[in-house]
Image 1 (cartoon, helix red, strand yellow):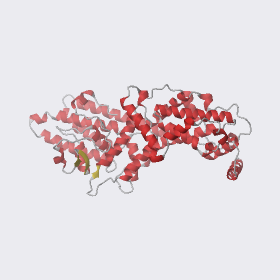
Image 2 (cartoon, rainbow, N blue to C red):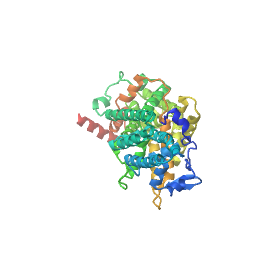
Image 3 (cartoon, rainbow, N blue to C red):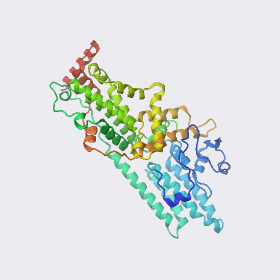
Image 4 (tube, rainbow, N blue to C red):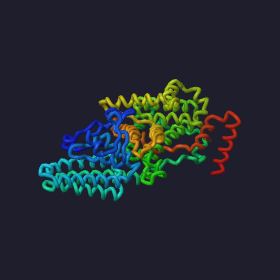
Length: 486
């Protein structure tokens, strides 16, 4: 994320981002004189906890003797969109830069020689911004402000043009990133539509030639690895600013300056859709099988796959598989479940027990995160959290604390916490998948037909008939509806 040129990194004081994990405290202490300069920021035990928007913006902009640490840059740029549009923030940053540049220009020759150093710090800030939050520059207004600041800064080094070259490369990289993301959104995967055709669902004769997951992959570990491949590919298209939409969109009715544009949440919706598709695929694979012995094999196979996902650190696929097996059309197959060795499934359900706000899962996630921090291999670095729980954590943290304090200052302590969660996710998503990709298996997982909830019930009743009056009535209604549709 923070890919900075070596020579600039060597000259800039940097603090490892979220090195202390922030916990309930805040990172990013400021230079002693900054409190007087900004006027109203409030600190607690040396940590910034609140301040006016103007003071926080001023703290973002470097000076000759100061450069904000990376934790603060990430947190402020991430949270600022709740209060101000990126192009407006860029304009304010530009105004402060120009003022500082003018002060250096009218000073002594010694101060003028500091212009290049000052320019390097501004470029450093712009690089971190464009690399970490590229989507902030998608509109013409933001690009215009960026070019304006860049133009002013290049004047500090007109002799050899080094600054100009660096800015040119930065702009080129930004445009490439925006282009790649635009293409992803234009493609917009065609979500699989659930099958409802009666000929596909009603099993009037054995489906001996029909493919199932075991005919494609019979090794639980390999399937878990392919699922991890898919997960990491999906999360790679999710950016920090996408996740912040959860906060800014909620507030959009109360604050007209929020970027509450739900059209920008496509990547979140696409990833959530993948979870639902995987759950329905698991249920489809189980319910559509005619023979009880084969259904039992598939149930046990998916239990083993979920266990391997857990061991890898792929909690999202694990939860999707468990959710699929807990859907009513699958859960009601008592004759099938009576033949399943459920001890391993019970362990999985224990890990995903919702009691005490999914305490068991959170303990396992914390263990995986700690392993990832000290890991030497990509295999050990994998952490894929349950996405809908992760989103809920951000949402409830947002709802529990106000954006502003009674005195009107921004409640920055809240945004330290939100940014910590988001930064962890962004760090995890950058892990390169260490497993070899199997196109055949992935094609099956991503394209094989899945049943709708209605179709699952029909297939379930075909596999094991209704056992009570309620089920008999449901089966009769479903069958009649499907036949009338033909």
